[in-house]
Length: 233
Ligand code: DC
Image (cartoon, rainbow, N blue to C red; front, top):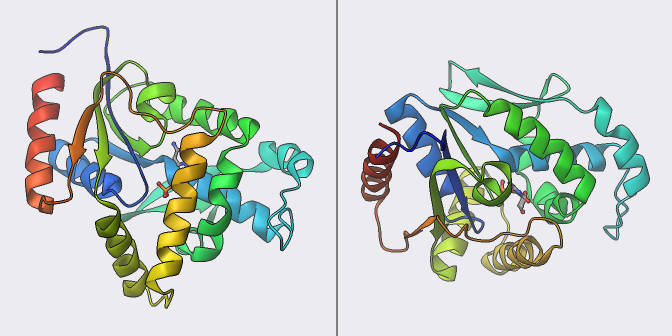
């Protein structure tokens, strides 16, 4: 049933490597929604900080300089018709590959725990969703960015399965990180995402949990399509 007070937004939250973006992309292409990867925006800010010497080798972030720089940071998405994929632009430079590296993964949770980084990006995410018709994935989409989203999904999966998914993804990109360092980074990020003071990762009360440990991609997508069609018809 459509609830007129709800925004025509699908919010997908969950731990790292629980298949949020795969479901979100599938929903976008099946239902003609625009997909927005909010994690890519945090990754782009983390990449900017690394490239501009705002994070020291021991991981300390120069928050004052980063906050000063926020107004000069522009993040956009553009659709590459050759690959059929969306790409992240940082100040007009295509950084899609650079933001997916272990180097960025190692610092992104610390960067995204900073309140001013969050408010800067949440404002932009809310603007992107003003007209509805979007599916956005992240950690605080159903709780903070779109508390009135018509559909909220919270994804989860067994730890070993998540580690294997992330490991395979990195391998397919030519990265040679071993399984244990992948596990360490994943659990480290979960810990920070769940325990930060500002908008920690939580299941929204009205979010539906999808444990996809034992589900194929097709099964998950069919489940999600039915849910969205029912709530956003
Ligand atoms: O979804 P991802 O792994 O690309 O996200 C990268 C990091 O960004 C993740 O460790 C937590 C953070 N993030 C966040 O704090 N809030 C969001 N809405 C999305 C991502």
